[in-house]
View 1 (cartoon, one colour):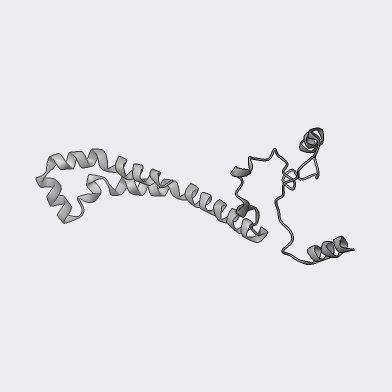
View 2: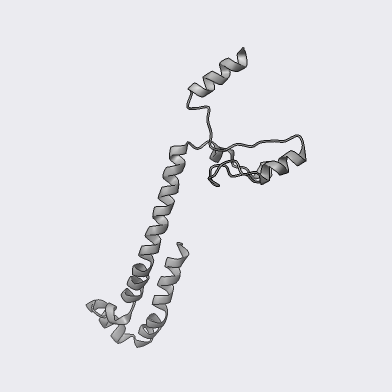
Length: 139
């Protein structure tokens, strides 16, 4: 029959599968039972939840291929790890670079801060916190 032919065509094609789906129940009791059931031993294989409002669904995200989704997930974990391991060195670098003692090693800045002690005091009080605030705004 036509249904069997289409089923075989879908199973043979890699384009016919998606990792996401919406299931609609005619009876509310069956929907509630489906929410409370455990389908496999792995809780992350089938994630069942109450559906969002149709206007809130980003349908393009449901069509992302499994390989691309896995790559983006690994990329996200890598970026979080990079931030985790890079946070302290970046904060320490910003704090050390903006101090007057490190800037005084540059002859032009040393002469500028020597002739303008008020600006040097303002810089010493604000530069590190402004640098850290700017860095934190990118997170």
